[in-house]
Image (cartoon, rainbow, N blue to C red; front, side, top):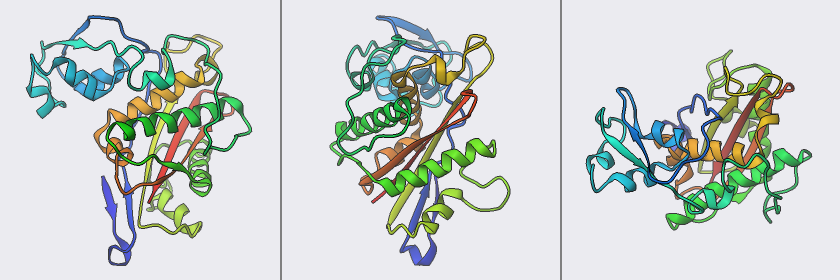
Length: 268
């Protein structure tokens, strides 16, 4: 995590490191399923592959392998892990089973306004619910939707789609885009942060003639973003930051539907 402390730390800009790619296509988990750790594996990667949270994966194996909680990035090759079946608990409580191709009807969250596109609106609401669920399990205050932060998040997503890049840094000049935008909006804060993630067509993951946006439902898309962030230590640090009270979430979607970028902005 990079910290910017201009003006003698009166303002603090907290920018997470980038989650390079969230890949769809690895949905669901079976009861009593196991996985043998391969060289180069990390627990966050395994958790993401099987759509479970890192904490659930560690808890399911802690009795046999207590060292996993100490060093989740370097599990010993050959370790046989139990993949937990979370059922309707945890994040799946909010998103439903991932194997469902169609998304359930969405009841608008009281603090999230309607978006022009119903599916995009549904994904945004589900991301916020999932993030707030994770905060609730740690007894942290719920993040309240902030329209100005959502505008900044939308500008970030649209810019990454339009200029075909994926970074907190501007690809053409030495500046942090989020920092520039939040200053330009004259948004007043003491703490602020940003998480980004993308899903895109890749190889054989999406059948010919379909796109990631058309192929997957709102709950599947939202689930991949939330689980990807939760299983990344630096992104999780933003999500569970006790200073944060407000959030704005937006999706940037390529015109051809082959790329979706999610941006979440946080502030106190």
